Length: 300
Ligand SMILES: [Zn+2]
Image (cartoon, rainbow, N blue to C red; front, side, top):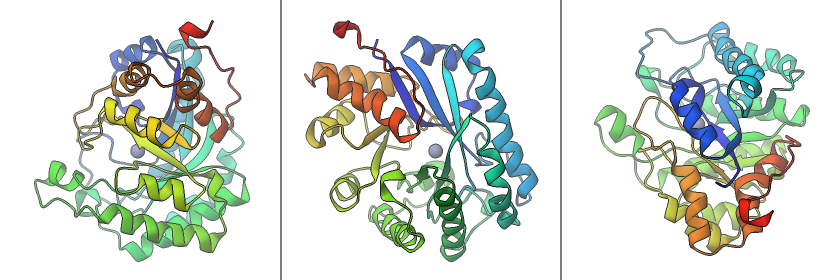
């Protein structure tokens, strides 16, 4: 078993048995991305407002508070205004966000990033999404919080709507537009994770920015497999890679794909200190969690 931190998940939408499985598979801690109203197959007919989004922040925060005793691992929360739907009066949420930073469970802002796809027909223009992104980056910058930058997944639209797949270059073009907003705000890239990186973005993020590159493994909407994760960490080094599952209940998932990726790294012969850095230390540092770093079994 290799101890790890899941740097981005929506596991509060998953059943107890999955939490147990993850704990048994080595998960020591996880950061819940909170704020998306779309966590399951439920349908909403009205655009959510600030009260509903705050409720989506509060529930995982309460779960996080009891996690060490109940779940035997730690949970932390990132609060954000999601791209998943339009949000009514979102400016009010920017005003309320700082109060949440007093809570030790809240460690980051996001996830949010330009995405042409919203659920339930609650379409948001990319221009307004830019305004929402800019506002949240300002709040995160002013309060010294890291930011989870979402990037779109090309297969998502096909899977959810049965419609036409989004073009491959979409992820890269949204990211470049996001990064222009990051630059305008003057948000420090070292405190940014560009999440859900794939072959079209990973190398670009590592070479052209000083942000962390998030690799999400486990959801059926993404093609990346555990052996691919091992290959990417071997090729690019572990220094700025954050691993995560992005587990969510609305689509098929392999709950164990992240711990399986760590085992794939061992089989591929990666040094234990590289595995530990990608599995645990980077997330521990990025989110300022200050957790004691557990040894991998062979090290002790
Ligand atoms: Zn997510």
